[in-house]
Length: 259
Image 1: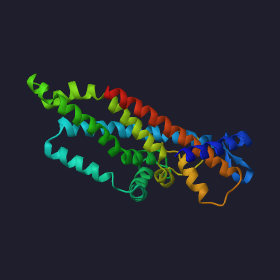
Image 2: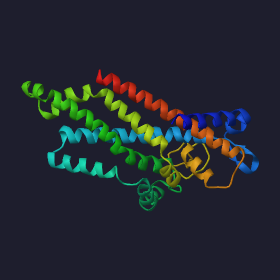
Image 3: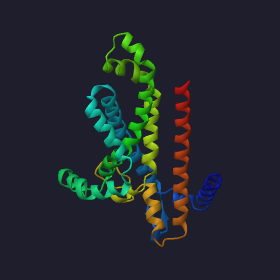
């Protein structure tokens, strides 16, 4: 892991030193010797953020349904479905969405259907089980610790969830959002298959975009060389930095929650 970190960092810095103006530009045109990745950085940030926000809201709702607001039978079914979703390959989400969600977006809102909105919806669905499982673990731990006391105070299961479990699990709930963001920012197939891969600053949810992860996959599959390959290391360095930072913050939040 240390060797990988050093390898990517050294080559990313080398690329920035040799051609900073080209790599930190806004235009990707290898034939014209322009290799700007700023639109891809923007795309990665807004796609990961939007997907994690959507996924986090639904993950919190699912967790509350499982732990107090739903019947035991339906809660068990939902829990099992979410666990099964963790085993579904990413390419299956993308493949199904090309034939189901893309036409729906195209006919309902216009555009090609391959857009920020489409990728965000599918990506949020993909990271949903990860966030639910993180919340579920915290909820179960706190419920086991407070169940007897809450029953003695006359609190119902719903009241215990709202007044005790949720406030106590606040740091875990926030850390699950961070976990979802890290998972979303590192995914390659969903942005590649559904976001449209247009190198531009996406403003509207219906705009196409290309993320850093999709860029790495697309460039590696082509015969483009030279500065284009330096852009891969810069993109990889940015993703590595985001991943390490998110992991450090996650561990800090988890450590404080244990305290």
